[in-house]
Length: 359
Ligand code: PMP
Image 1 (cartoon, rainbow, N blue to C red):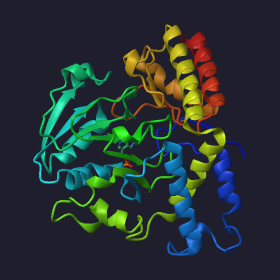
Image 2 (cartoon, helix red, strand yellow; image 1 turned 135 degrees about the vertical axis):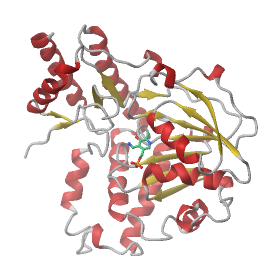
Image 3 (tube, protein in one colour; image 1 turned 30 degrees about the vertical axis):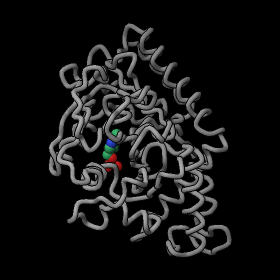
Image 4 (cartoon, rainbow, N blue to C red; image 1 turned 180 degrees about the vertical axis):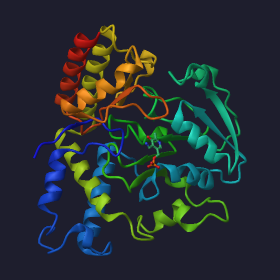
């Protein structure tokens, strides 16, 4: 068996030790004689798995008591609708910052439910930065302000969160658990699991409890946070196996030393790669230095005609999924928590060799 260095943007690499543990427990989970996939979500064995995962997530992110953690389905995309449905609470408008493809999608969906005030957009500079907060045109009566913490496609990330007079909502799909955050600054945080949490199919929502219970009258039950909160995220069958694997990932993070330790590794990995890009005359990063993502690192070659060769030579060297998103082209290395530092070292070495041969 050989595993490649996987730079996929999501679903993405999982820690090998987590997959090994899942393999060990695949046919007989801790003496139950069955796989976690085959268990009732109401069984004691699964309830224990679910509660432990939730407690470990609370511990990792130091989530205060006045927040509810939800393990939902539907991906981050479903949150684009759930947020206005639940948080407008009688108000007519919400503020959104547009920093790229995922903000744009969130804005479009929210427009079905409310007036969307785009406080600022980086579209004019091809989403290469986060617009300066001094220039944001916020609405004092907005129900909330929505930001995307890390634009997975553009590779733009907040390194300092904005101060907001309205409740701050963040899409952290591609950078949750990559570094410590002060949860109390946010009204709601959401993330699809398939980057830093676990397999696709699970969506984590962390919401301040006082915001629950205000869903619009016709909100379907599955889209009402309060209903999920009341049922401990088991108002219907949850994605049990993804929840279990997320729990294994949380424990892996704890054993590694928690989010401070993870952040130090992530910073080191990203810094190395950006330094290699900046020092070369061949590769180029399209993102403003201040806002460069630690998780998704896009880079371009001097001539797109080299792209195919670069990708096939990389694959041969065991480095996979480096192609940029189909909407922007170029290259992108996603270096989430589970992508080891060795993978980044191997990528840098490969890039330097390629540059020498083709540059
Ligand atoms: N937001 C961000 C930042 C994302 O990266 C993604 C998926 N790549 C989404 C939202 C959409 O997530 P999902 O596919 O889970 O609906």
